[in-house]
Image (cartoon, rainbow, N blue to C red; front, side, top):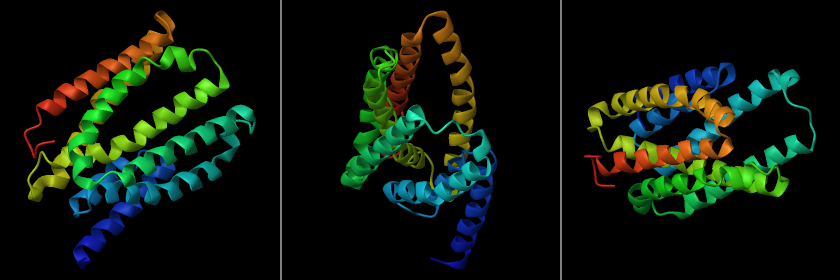
Length: 220
């Protein structure tokens, strides 16, 4: 690893740590850079999550006065988060890199579609066990998505502009897609019920599958 790469990673780490502590979402900076310097998607995913964890933890401790009360609901959320993250990590590490790059994006699209139909049966009942299962599956899918997303984006751009292209695509997609997710989900839940929030997620999964079929980079 040359000095130039070390300096890029150091600067990215500082910017990502600052962003994680202030507003969150540091992965939009750190993850594309890790891919750009040549790390495989699986390694980049694991490295990115470890790198941003410290900033997130320090931010939570600094703002601990605004944390929810340490009750059963909070403990259940933490346990569900850990279980989902562990499941996603185990599956991520157990998957061969080439298979990961080709198959996981498509499987995640199908899984997202099915997961959308689980909103009402699982989380709508307010049953602790079902909510735990819902959160574990959701966090697991989320953990797996980061690596496959980076791999899919990286195939779209030649090496000289891979960082710029994947970073811009990631950020623009986040702005156009994620910025509408919360208000649309809230409106659907209020107007039609929780099940329609799941249907909204399923539609997003269908759009994802269609988009994957039109990727013209390295074949997924």
